[in-house]
Length: 301
Image (cartoon, rainbow, N blue to C red):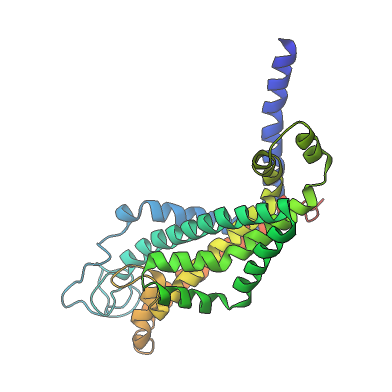
């Protein structure tokens, strides 16, 4: 009974200490902290978009076309960041665009993580011709420019946000597969894996329970960085007309609709561009901090 209590107590002490060590290493990177708080703020805005947005992002105000932001002469108090060329409130569209961008990043990272990690586990665990076939397929995907390949996939299917997310997921698949395969190969001959195999663990248990948890640190970093790449690629596809379709409030689509007004009304292009810049920068900064905190070789003493 006493041994059981000691075991529970030690487990309760270890978990907070591990988290405290991680946070200490992470918080040493000031840029990562800035990125983290920016992402938290973005998540809050995305969740509360319906409450924070003053208007419906698709509603067109008659006679209120191309109104400037509040700090420019000729603005209206009702539209703090102005309106676009068809009279839609820019602030409302930016807020709802934040929600859509996070959803895009989440879906893309989830899809690519599931399939990429699965392929990497199978390739690293079984090796041989299975490894050869999977890795050559990843080479083919990675040999093509990601944006070009995404455009080809969307052209084969049809122009839609769903197909854009599928296309982006396929282009980032090799990163997860290669990382997982490398981690599995480095871990598979270690004593704890051999002990599990001797104890009678099957292949599925070895891959998912024994090997996968020890492959997570680089995958977490890659997922964070891929989040920013997914948002950027989705914005690029939206700008080219192959992603979210009007009147959807998406930052890339907003850029595409406003590009003809860049000289006379620059704020229409500048504001969604700044949102993309700040969001991508925040995820990259946090990814660098996670890399430093999770990789023992990079932890500062």
